[in-house]
Length: 212
Ligand SMILES: [Zn+2]
Image (cartoon, rainbow, N blue to C red; front, side, top):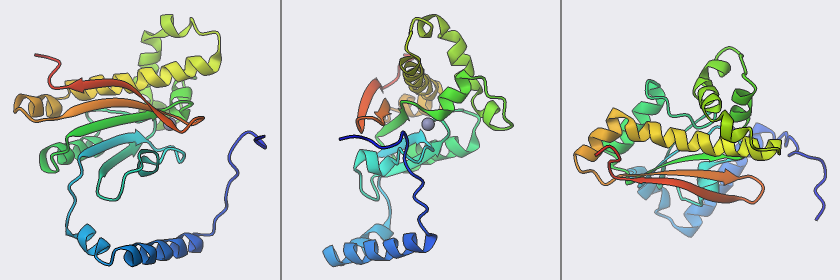
C-alpha cells in the first residue's frame, strides 16, 4: 500500500464532535455492561504507572491496549524522569506508596521530537532547559552515537539511551530505593514504541534493588 505524503494530516476535528463521540462511547459501554461506570467510580487499583512522552502519537492506553483503571499515567516531553520535578515525583509517590503499583514503565518512542531537539541543542525558553538531561546524555554517548552513519538510526539509538537513562534515575531515586528497602514488590521497565510498526520494544528491566 502506498502512503500518500510523509506525515499525518491535521484532522481539524470540531471539538463538538469529540463530545458527541464521548456520549456515544459512554452509551455503548453502558449497553454492554450497565454497571461499568458505577464500578469505575468506586476506585482505582492500577498495577502500572506509565511514564511516557506527550507525543500525540503515543497514547498510553492505546498502545498498551489497557482499560480504564489499569494505568496510572504521567506524560511529559521526551518521558523525562527529573527527581526534583514535583509533578512527576508526586505521581510516582502516589503510585508507589498509595496505589501500590507493581510496575513502573518508562516508555519512549523512536523519532522523539524532544530527543531530536536536545541533539540539536535547542535553546528555546523552557524547552531547551527541560531537555538538559538528554543533552548531557548525548554528549556522554557521542563516541557510540557517532559510529552511526544513518541519521535516523543515530536518533533512534539516542531515544533508547534516553529511556535507559530515565530508568537508571528512577532506580536511584530515594523514593524507589526506600520502597525496595521496605521490601516492596516493584519492577521498573524501559520500553520504546516504534511508530513505524506499532510495536513496543522492551529495552531494560530492573527488578528489586540494584544498589545492594
Ligand atoms: Zn517524544
